[in-house]
Length: 230
Ligand SMILES: *Cc1c(COP(=O)(O)O)cnc(C)c1O
Image 1: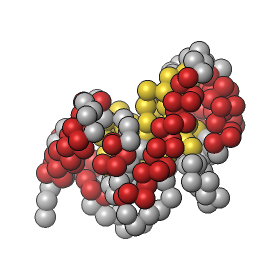
Image 2: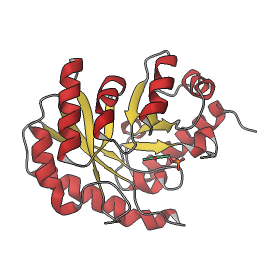
Image 3: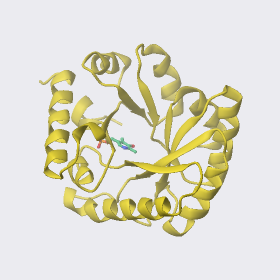
C-alpha cells in the first residue's frame, strides 16, 4: 500500500501536469488535504510529508483534532456551517469556504470580532440548483456578496462550488465554468473589500478538470488519505 507521503506527491504531480496543460502556474494552485473522519496520526503523517493546508467538515471533530496538530498549518472549514457553531469555526479556522447566507456571515463576523481576528471566507454557490445542497443560488449571489463586504471581520476572497454528483469528471466542467463566470461577474463590480482571487473547486474525482477551468484551491481527501468509512 502506498504511504500518505507517496500519494501526496502523486497528487502534487498531477496538479502540476494539469496546470501546465492549461498554461497556468502550478504554484497558483493550493492543495487542501481533506482529513474529515481521519485520525490525528494520519494528519501528522501528511503534515510531515509537506501538507500545508488541511480541510475539515465537522466542527465537533475539528475541535478535537486541530489542537493536536502542531506546525504552521492553514485550516479550512469546508462543511455546512450552523449558526450555533460559528464561534468554534471563528476560533479554529483561517478559511471558511461555505458562506451561503446572511445569518451565517453575521454569526461568523460577530464571533471573529470577539476573537480579534479576520476570517478569510468564500461564498458557496449552488450552480447546479440542487434542492438537497447548500450554497447560494446565482440570483442571490450579488446581494450576499454586498452583505459580506460590510462585515468588517470577514475578508471575502472568492467562490466555492460542489458540483452535482457525476460518474465522469467531464460532467463537472460546466459547473466549474459557470462558477468562474460568476466570480468574474462579481469581480467586475469592484465592490470595496471584495476580491475574487480564489476559486475553490475540484475534489479527488475531478480536480484536474477544475484546474483547467481556473481552480486556485482543490480539496482532495480520498486520493491522499484513502476511502472514508462514513
Ligand atoms: C469530503 C469533501 C471533499 C473531499 O472529497 P474527496 O472526494 O474525498 O476528495 C472536498 N470538498 C468537500 C466540500 C467535501 O465535503
